[in-house]
Amino acid sequence: MTVSHIIILLFIGYLVFSIDKKQDNFPVPAILVLMGMGLSLVTYFSNIEVTEAIIYNIFIPPLLFISAYQFPIEGFLKNRKLILGLATVGLLLMMLLLGGAIYGIGLLFFSLPLTASLLLASILTPTDPVSVVSIIKQATGDEDLAHTVEGESMLNDGTSVVVFTSLLTLYQQPNSVSFASFFADFFFVFAGGILIGVIFGWIVVNIIHYSHHPHYQLMLSIVLAYGSFIVAEHFGFSGVLAVVSSGMMISYAFGQTEKEDHFRSQLDGFWEIVELSLLAILFLVIGIEVTEYLRGSFVAFASVVFILTIIVRFIVIYVMTSLLDTHNLQYNLLITWSGLKVLCLSS
Image (cartoon, rainbow, N blue to C red; front, side):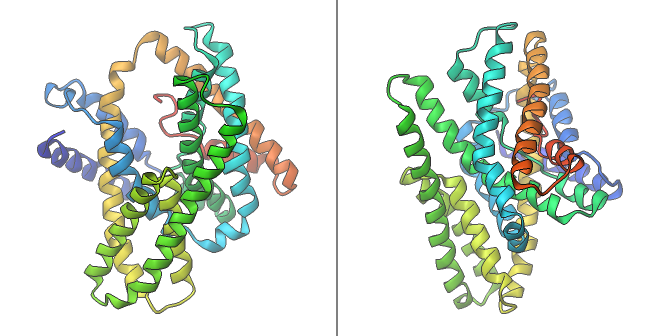
């Protein structure tokens, strides 16, 4: 992808986001993907290639960081049982149920090994609400629901990466991973990522006031977002959880005092621009890349998997909320639908 590609994609993103400012509940991610699919028909864009390393190492850290530091700690603490339950046990249950279902229906399309089915399920089970949270707040006014969906999305990104990595190893080397080692690795990567994020966040919280110039403070936030990710990945921990933890440390620390309100204001302005720019490029590129996979058998299979994802997610949420005895059927339906991936069908 060249610089000119990036500039043009940013301009297209600007146009779409500008329209969104005038129309409530405008489905920006879906529109951007559809526009990307249209761009794939243009020769100039059809040769764009984006590797998984670019997505994972460049796009993911800042997108997670801004979500984490803007997430209200009070909302997390109030709904922590359901958030943590859905992001850990709930995600594992969804992965197992969806993986088994994919394995079963895969026989009707093309045979998939059980490990491959579980691998696909680990990709689809993490939630990706994107702009859904703001719509929930506008339509229902239910802050708890919005916080639950957003909190689950942040944490299960890290959980799913850990699960995916372990399943990928199992798929590639079937005899190298045991049930016990799977959960040992899961805990090691999960806990290590959180620890790195907390340490980096604590360091930044304690040194940020030495950099009185807001531009220098913003530079430090970039170091935190990418540095916590890189260090965690270097030591074999979850870089995703490290970024989320460091961002939430910032949110917690500056939520306790008004001393650094000017820093929060500068941080919001800078990272919101970064977020919109990266999301515009990301969704457009996904639309461009996914077009070549839109074949009859793949679309039919993806449609069935999409329906299965909804059913499995509802079942797990119903079980989790029943155990906690906190919410009704309408709440379960809302959290089921709002947590679905925008691109579940194309995934």
